[in-house]
Image 1 (cartoon, rainbow, N blue to C red):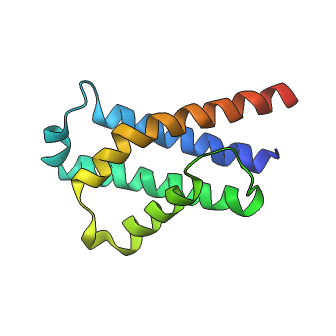
Image 2: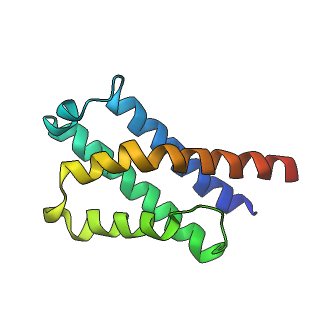
Length: 116
């Protein structure tokens, strides 16, 4: 895996970590739903994740990330269908999908370190 792909993986990981920091602990939907700044900060980082994933897929389409295409689709939905975004859907991504993505990205980065 080349350096550029590794950089994009790091961008994804950093955005996930930022979202985790923004959400805080305990993760409460009401806090998210009632804070427009928090929603927009999370959505911006999901856009970054989706854009990085799009670039990765263009260069490395066989990457071992289970929801890679859906990640790009989510980015497109946030950007182009911004008026249809529901906090419940973004929250589901935060709770159900970002932890899995984080594990997959960390695994890929660990594997690439062994190759170097």
